[in-house]
Amino acid sequence: MRCGGRSSGSPQSISGGRDVTSRRLNDHDRSGQPELPLRAAEYVRMSTDHQKYSTENQSDAIKQYAEARGIEIVRTYADAGKSGLKIEGRDALRQLIEDVQSGNTDFTLVLVYDVSRWGRFQDADESAYYEYICRRAGIAVEYCAEQFDNDGSPISTIVKGVKRAMAGEYSRELSTKVFAGQGRLIEKGYRQGGPAGFGLRRTLIDEHGATKGLLERGEQKSIQTDRVILTLGPAEEVDLVRGIYRAFVHQGYSEREIAADLNERGIPTDLGRPWTRGTVHQILINEKYVGDNVWNRRSFKLKKKRVQNDPEMWIRAQDAFAAVVERELFEAARTIIGARSFRLSDEEMLQSLRKLYQQRGLLSGIVIDECDGMPSSSAYSSRFGSLLRAYSLVGFAPDRDYRYVEINRELRKLHPGILREVLDGLQATGSAAWQDLETDRVIVNGEFSLSVVVARCIETPTGLLRWQLRFDTSLAPDITIVVRMDSANRAPLDYYLFPRIDMLSEKLRLGEENTLGLDAYRFDGLELLYDIATPIPLGEAA
Image (tube, rainbow, N blue to C red; front, side):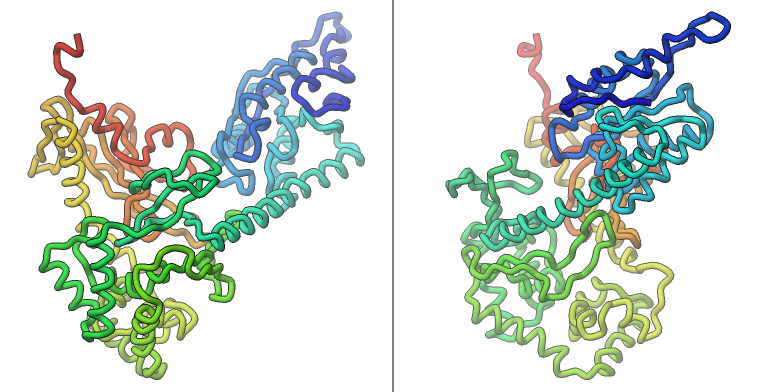
């Protein structure tokens, strides 16, 4: 079947060319009765590479192609904002394949804008396989904007194979270019994601370097040419960080002793939480406090497994922004921390780890970092290649990563604080909000109820991030606030606001990318909730 011979690839030219299909459809069969028009499904996919590939533009072009050939489009499968690298997360394509395999189809043709919209699979055979599933079920696939007929001929097979390989290669080249671009931004001192940290702030600047203002937690830049840099935070926070370093280096206080002192003084972390040995330790080892910009410690290219990169692969820019502490003081703290493990033999380190395992019954990075007198989890990972290998050497072989035990414990501690934050936010905007101590529900203005669920981030063996939710439907809150934690389970990533009417299941699984039906409820903050809950005076409402 001809897909339109033309000199231009624009959507307007798709309906031109040889109209073989329409002639065939208008032919009469031997009984003298005209054939019914072909019934087709359209598949559209948009990533973020170019506006011409928006789902709307693809659909318009496909409709032109179908109308010129007398084809009736009876169903649409759309993946909006989805990468074509893998089928995971592409719910529409998976549904299409499932419908074809189950025979749940009322069409005999699938129309796709071009080969790349079907997918930019890194293995061209995967793209061919999904098309083969359709063809095996008697359903043809046509690429409307391509210059070849997908008729199974040797020429079409060769051209299609080249196109598939080119689509995959495009993604690899794009990944390389994006990585190089991000690396250059790091070297120029621009921040590439992540919270600023205690004593620092994220500052937005324009393309000319002029300051536009501070970004609050959860806020992101909206203009592509804008950049984010780290700047010094409030003077009292900066002085506190410097005091932590001096207490550790000059006065010989341990991380736990410093944390206890800060908590006794009633000083919270940047996340509003009590200090721990681990949070103090992170301040002492993070190079951003000496003004260095470091990136690519871990990578996740082309949707493959996340990997911990060797230090020589890290991209570092020294003195990229104003330092909180002098380099000499920072290096002194690093030397003290490194000496804890340097002076220990492998067996001595393993003996400490073995003793901790006997005491706690499990091991994790959090358990190790919160234990006084122990080398840090990063020291074990560096000395033995990985934490899992260190675990195995002391007889700890978990069926799964037991970090979840400590993480869940920490999340349970976070829940009251998040609930308090919601209450404060509602009350600050004029709402009457109070907590039902029996159910932990928040009652707002005596009109509706809220429930807060904290979702732990889980990294799959393939490096994908997942959030599994379990709702207590017996509480029957009018709105459930899902706080989705970041990959380290230390800070909220974003929020989902689910009304009860749309809560059809007690369990829900979220990925990094979700369908529009889920992401329609996603927000970077809770400002919309506060605005909705704000009472309107009767006179103003009238």
